Amino acid sequence: QVQLVESGGGLVQPGGSLRLSCVASGSVSTLYVMAWFRQAPGKQRELVASIGKDGSAYVADSVKGRFTISGDNAKTTMYLQMNRLNFADTAVYYCNMKTGAGIAWSEFWGQGTQVTVSS
Image (cartoon, rainbow, N blue to C red; front, side):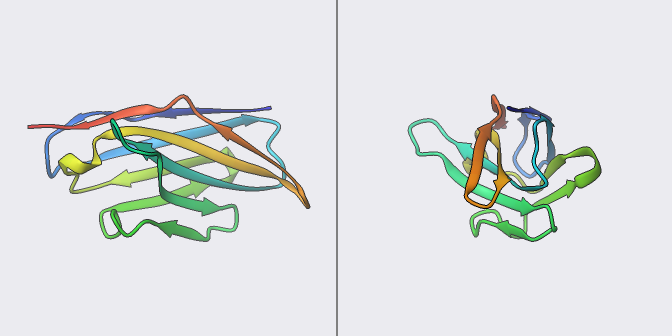
């Protein structure tokens, strides 16, 4: 089992910044991919950004240029630096990890952290 703990959410004004962190612990395999998803009220959960252990990263077009994903392999930790936040970024942000080898991969979720952009 893998445990994912997010932190860093909160209330911020439009144009502000927040930095989310996700720490993974437990049975993390040699290979893994970590990602941030978000879910706004009444909407489906969507992928925001992902990063592989090799540092390869993906950022959704909706946040490209404003959000930056990074990771620390030694700490099995992932970060999401969110700048120039706007109302549309309000959502619960979830940490996700896929880990395994070959055809045996498992997926885990954190409990989520609320990000609210409000004036």
